[in-house]
Image 1 (tube, rainbow, N blue to C red):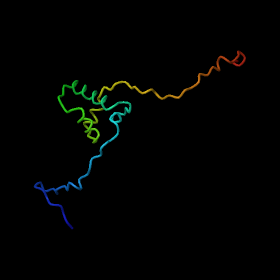
Image 2 (image 1 turned 135 degrees about the vertical axis):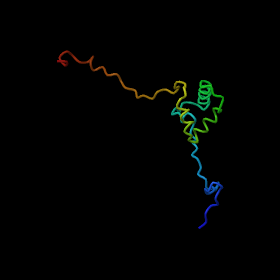
Image 3 (image 1 turned 90 degrees about the horizontal axis):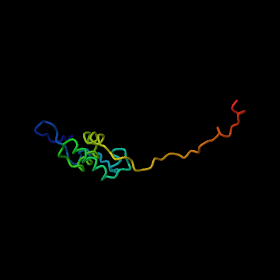
Image 4 (image 1 turned 180 degrees about the vertical axis):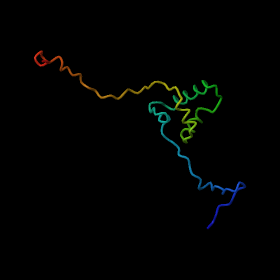
Length: 111
């Protein structure tokens, strides 16, 4: 049985080839905030505005998006605070006919 070499702290060294890879979310940027109608530019603009509002000088908006795609909790929490533009996509609602039964009833039907 072969053990990995120990580091100065006494913990075994992590082999870079066996290091766990982080999940990278390759979906469109709008999906990170549950808004598929938003483009990446819209999201980057909203991030930049929030950074200015909070008086921060960094990180760059693209870095925040990349961190969110990697699943970083701070970045995801930051995205939840964004003021996003209103939806541009039309609402998908079924078409329902207006029923005019009350106009076709006679006085005797109502009794």
